[in-house]
Length: 144
Image 1: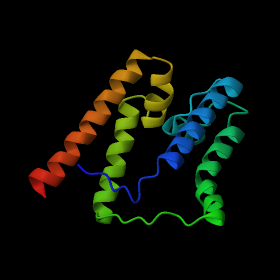
Image 2 (image 1 turned 30 degrees about the vertical axis):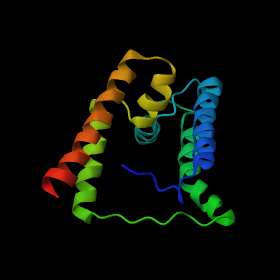
Image 3 (image 1 turned 90 degrees about the vertical axis):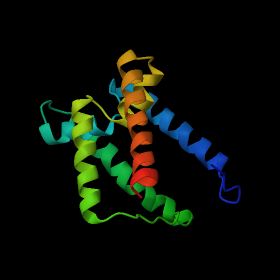
């Protein structure tokens, strides 16, 4: 593995990580909620609790509007996806199944759970990261 030093951006990555941690901490402090995307979106679809809708919508809108706001000040990074729509749909369904089966997603377990030293979140994060590494290895080196 080599690092592309011309495009290595540690300061923006550090700032982004701090902002993610700060937002997760503020949501926990002020709302008593975990900043797990699958749980937040799932709560929007279930709408079990009254008064729970506004903050969830604000959170999801923030995820959508943040890149638009960023684009006002800087160019968005170029992206290219080497997969067909079928593969993307299948991958999305598998991720959705995994988040329901694992009772959370990468942001809920990986960011919020590990920071709270939750054993369940530590194990879940180790498992989904390990499976991710294994999947990339198989797809890129054994199949591709």
